[in-house]
Length: 215
Ligand code: G6P
Ligand code: MG
Image (cartoon, rainbow, N blue to C red; front, side, top):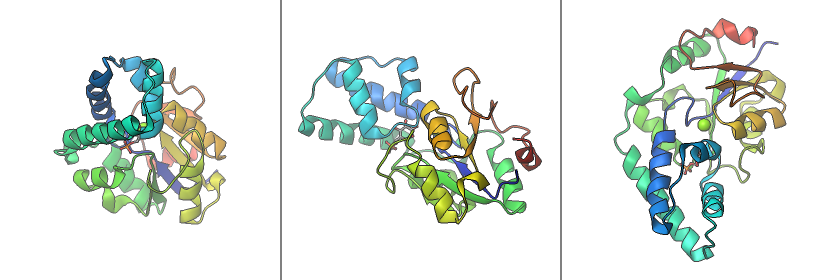
């Protein structure tokens, strides 16, 4: 299959913000004496802010009012914005810029498909913004991954069918979202975690645009 477009998740694929989300949620958990574990954080990857809070409160068996939840969502995001305020191009994951350069030179269209409402801030701070033909982020979708909305909007916005797009994802929910949208998906991370992906690579180091024809 020859693809026309590459759709990239942001957190954990292009930049490593998972650590900042983890820290920000851990800080928030102090409000209700809850210690989030790394295993739980793994399950929050690709999951929207509000859905993440709901899951954490569930794990903590804490029932909060809607008003309290609103305040905590703001507090978590304030924590997060503070943590990412000094992000810079050195935080782009290894091999990413080289790979983006190759696919751009070969004429592939490039879109972002992220649940994050902070995606544009991160793309600006890291200097990644100019690579993208289209940004679909948490402000443009109403359904969280594994719903395919974010990737279907990406394909549609670029003018391609799902079969012409290939998705790069580090989260279980994101891999399922791509599959649900009828797209091929390359998992970034560990094969044991991303077993439903068509192929799993640890990172972009040494990946060539010609490899897309093999996926
Ligand atoms: C990404 C991350 C999630 C995060 C979500 C929303 O998908 O993997 O951990 O909860 O974006 O991010 P936001 O920046 O809008 O809180
Ligand atoms: Mg991710």
